[in-house]
Amino acid sequence: MANLAQGAAVNRRFGFLENSNGNAAAVNAAAAAALQQQQQQQQTLNRDNRDRKAVEQLLVEITDRDLRENAIYVLSKLFGQAAKRDVIHEMIPLLWHSVGCIAALLQEIVSIYPYLLPPNLSVGASNRVSNALALLQSVASHKDTRLPFLNAHIPLYLYPFLNTTSKTKPFEYLRLTSLGVIGALVKDDDIEVINFLLPTEIIPLSLRAMEAGDELSKTVATFILQKILMHDVGLEYITHAPERFYAVGQVLAKMLTSPNPEQPPSIRLLKNIIRCYLRLSVNPRACEALRDCLPGILREPAISQYFRDDQGCLSSLQQLLRNVYGARKLSFQSGGGLEHLFAG
Image (cartoon, rainbow, N blue to C red; front, top):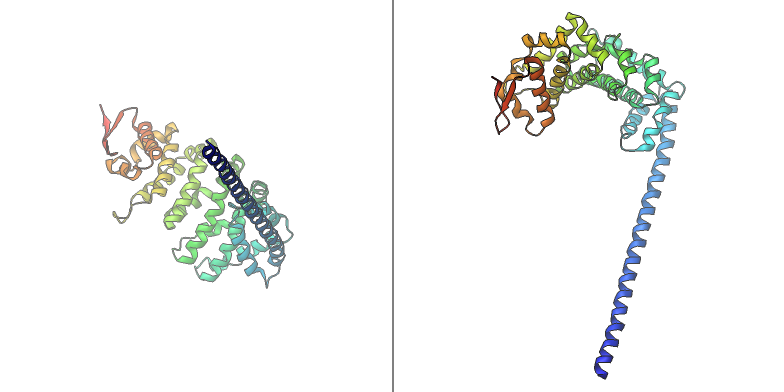
């Protein structure tokens, strides 16, 4: 009995020690984690302070002709992080409100107008202006500066770039970054943006980019068209005049007809095209016209193979076909392909 009692005491003693050691280890681990978190927060704070000072200095340098090119380049890289870092996003309005900065960016833009026609734009000049356009895109995407940006008619300065048809790399890069600014404006579905853009030449300029641009420019330009169509005022504008509707329809159809059958439109571009057609099909007059001019590729069973992993886009295609050709039943094979477009 004495041995049992002694063993129990020893067990209790060692058990207590084990618990004590376990509790100590947990406390140490929690303290280490808290210290690491505190260090990370301090590092983030220090980084944010450095970036604030850097942005303020760069905004001063933008107004200096000798320092402007590098300042624009560095600031465009910093502002490119705005989506991931709140501190950078919050500093975008400083660019708009800093005296002389927007004027300096516009000087960069208009300085290359003489090289647009005849096309004689160097890669270096294109990159320099594209960096300035990247800063304007940041201003266009920020909710506090978007409307002042429109009221100053800044987008009109970009239209000469969208009006070009040269397919060389300098012009293509310029076209894409200009489309990025307009895309940033329409992204949030602001009706004031649409009301501003419609009376301008944005529709024919977007169509030109859809014809002359490379795959990425086509995708962004079609996205812009789609966003305009999603508003009733945009849909009415395009479908009100037959020539506008047919101009849009012809360009959309042309993008679906690839000169190389082995290189069809990308999935992203195809999605935007289908969404444009779907929105057009909501208008009765446009829907009636689409019965005669909807591209045949959209009625082929193979088209559904593009959307095996995107049921939403496949549903948009089905709805488009129902809108255009009536409420006939569309049956699908289990593999995802269209077996019959029209049954019954």
